[in-house]
Length: 416
Ligand code: PMP
View 1 (cartoon, rainbow, N blue to C red):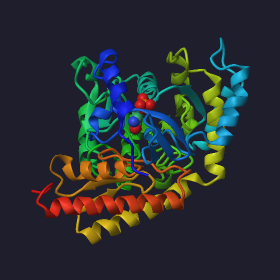
View 2 (view 1 turned 135 degrees about the vertical axis):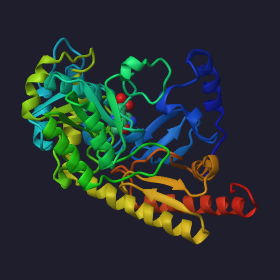
View 3 (view 1 turned 30 degrees about the horizontal axis):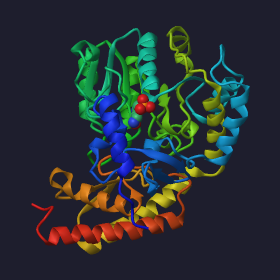
View 4 (view 1 turned 180 degrees about the vertical axis):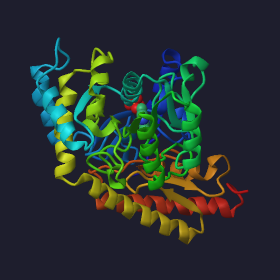
């Protein structure tokens, strides 16, 4: 069915422009996307979204990774619905916080304790604070260009940020042992932590899997300096493995930060820590009015159980590979250079010779007009509710999008 005009979407945008600064904010601001993208959604189910004008999409952004099992997964919804009438945000936590912490500790190999908060930023920030409390040192190393949240110490935008907010940070290049060594060297005897994501998943560029030598070196450097290795699993958590994703490399962090998928869209994030960090975690004052809410914790218990029980990481990897193979074959047949990088279940699709991202924007716009929501410059996410039929339908759409793109290129547009 052809897409209807985005009339209501445009009306809402005009109203928002008056009462929301910039019309929208943060990573969900559709102003950062091509014009064909809707800003507003009125419904989501499984792997599907409906915009405010009623158009349906197969969604490959999945709430920027919060949707792991499918929007409104029945078992997660049941767990949340059972907790809701008993209480959510109360004067004290519900018993399920203990059960959830037990489950987390079982799941995350390095962890002997867990703490819960709301956003990924809460979790990464808490990890950094705990690492300083534990080590009594100040310098925190993080990869140039890596995203760890929107607090002043880590936001990618400069506005409102003071040099003092970043004073004790040193940047290194991901997967570059020499640059990590140099950063550690310049920290002298003041190294509190190395913060690292399990793979390089910066926006706008090809993803990079971790070089095992780099991961091992990060561990070794922390051990030598009695510093803390922090793994930011906010985006990767439960999509690559059921515990930490560096377990496969034989590298265990001291602290790990979790968020996004852990409660299948209910607001919850977590810090998991190993035994030596327990005392620092006890001393640091971390809290928030909503951090103890019981409904997201009940949802998380169900999510963690289902993810492992149903082999979700393997399923989304398989589906992601199908999608990747199909797109690679289409790109080849049209003679268009496309780079698909990172794990198949977190697809990143970027175009060669893409001046100002014109090709990516055109191709994804053609897809969205045909009912497939792809992202032009951020990694995407496959969820367990995607089916082989969804992938097949997606590939029909991407084939049409490639044909349209190829036509543009052959007419001399969108190329050098
Ligand atoms: N770390 C990583 C790796 C992330 O991808 C994100 C969110 N994109 C964050 C931290 C911050 O999470 P949140 O947006 O929930 O604060």
